[in-house]
Image (cartoon, rainbow, N blue to C red):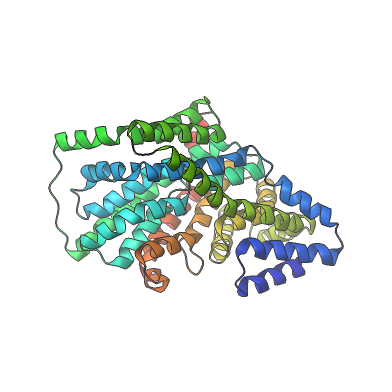
Length: 422
């Protein structure tokens, strides 16, 4: 069965089918060849989405759409610019800081890249940065969306593995911030290489004025994260809170009307269809991998190379990066969960520590060619061919890998905050 599943998967992938239908077609073919009842396929696809935790996906999609309509991003960009705009390469730093703040509100790398890119790519061009660098910077900043909570991919992973979503959210805070700082350091070195000058430091009064204007926008991540951390509401309920807050904010600031809310509902429903279809078919594909004992065989192959936990994790990182280069993040994550579960049990890994490493490495795949979806989104905003962004994206990939290695060898980077809040 494994041979049929894997060979058909790559054939359909090479033929250019969307990844959801690649997995669905491969799974259906394997079901037919093995004589497994089609009812099982239907059950697996339905039960995979019959989850209260997954309700957070459309809610955060809706919240992100409302944020865009209420022009929250403009206020955040202006405030971030007042804080860090005076540093050499100030606009690049503003992009990174905006990415970190927006990640704590949105949860999606593609949505973050689109929202930030529409504003920052033209501004970065005008400031003297070349378009490939601007596109790569926006893709990297947007890619913090699934790492800094709330995170849609964390919700999906936690739903599939029964891990506490709150702990996973908290585990992503410090790594996400470290990556954002790493992007800013590289941006500073790049700006110095270009010979960019310092801008004047914003006066305290200007910073205060920008803060007041962005205050209610900045409250969004504070409400979401503090509510989850204190247990006032669950991660799923936090999505509903974010939606309600954005609606109230939009009406008070007179940025939206009832029609905007209805349009946002429609757009959120459309945006949710993609990941939900992927979850359906990826779950069927994952079920067949488990059914055919793929997990035991894969873990056995890894353990045959080494039983040292650090070497095993490096092998896992290399495998995930390879898969992430060709398969969309959500699909790849669900597809590999059976193997991850077996590996955690065999090696005695901390499941939260392991999960955050896996998610970060899969997110690296989102900006790595040839199937770097977030990089595609950023290139689309700038109308830049993907081939022109391949070279400048690699420094950001290496920064994310460096943080990943830090988490592997110093687990407290990811596990300290969740343990403090238990």
